[in-house]
Image (cartoon, rainbow, N blue to C red; front, side, top):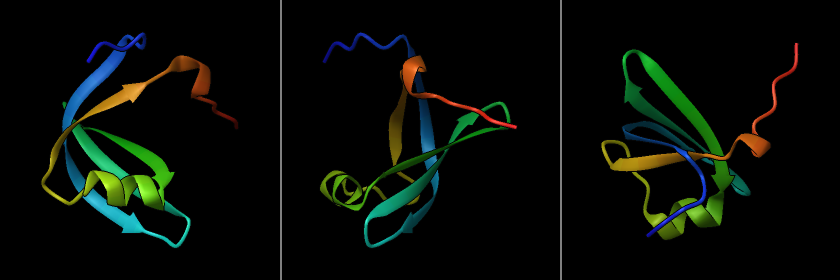
Amino acid sequence: MKLSAQNIFSGKVTEVSLGPVNSRVKVDIGGGNIVTSVVTAGAAEDLGIAVGDELSVVIKSSDVMLAK
């Protein structure tokens, strides 16, 4: 599969918090860095995401926002 996104990191799932609408997934991408993603509960279920899974984290910069 080819993607237009350039920010792709491999990692291991360390935590999955399933909710009725959204699920929070934490992925250790190495170097002491943890990426947290919120996906729909349906997406988490369809992908079968579980602690210990190896997966890719794809970050599209136009969808990342920070506020302080």
